[in-house]
Image (cartoon, rainbow, N blue to C red; front, side, top):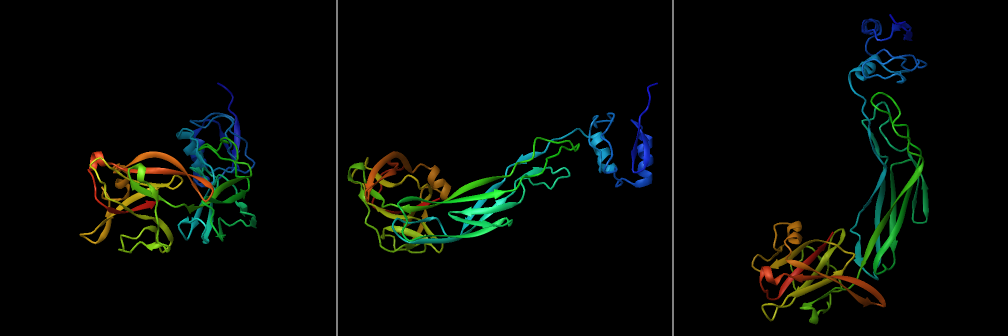
Length: 333
């Protein structure tokens, strides 16, 4: 018979691979009794507990779980940041714009946490918002963005969060899994879009810049013949435009919007119901997927000395038939 090795658990001597002695330990200390903090690593394999498994500080309940369940690795998710603002991030190019917001830092996760904190990174150390640095360990950092006159297209604000190193992820058997996340940083950009003039017409030969209303048109307005930017209480949400009548069955109305703005939905004004309704769909998404306005590719136009790429939306006359003069709202994401 091979020699049996003995090790100590909370002052009790346990022979290797002896379930009856573990049960005796449970009777003495209960399932919540713990190995000494200086206990040696496992010297033999018992069930799914391999030689070398760290036992120091573990409860008997945890050891039994490790014996009867296979070792599992956690899923590691890197830290991230989220930017929230109190206004929509669109406004006419050349106009003043301001918004208040907050940067929310998420430390990522170790899941299941297996005796760790469950967080992949350490606490935040500082936030760099534009040229301003804020030293704080808070997970939320407020900020204000202001521009006296938005540039046409993307107006960017750099946001960086510096964070401390994370802890060592563990497996279900308390073995090290991969490595701790080192101290580092994560960055995002706040993008405020300065909106260029839009173009519309019948067929591409007659497309021209749309003359728009000077003030924003509120989303509740029923003045369907106005043309210009539409806004709710939190800022610009889209563009309202008149598309004139097609003169022939194969004529198609065309709308051109700068290509860095994505559409979320299309509405048409129902003059019988006297309200804005979704165009060729029951909701915003369906108005896009219905292909009522086809992708007509891109075209570059010069606006105030700057080249702007436009995306063309061409009414799908083949599938939906010719239309008379109509009033549309092209809504932004």
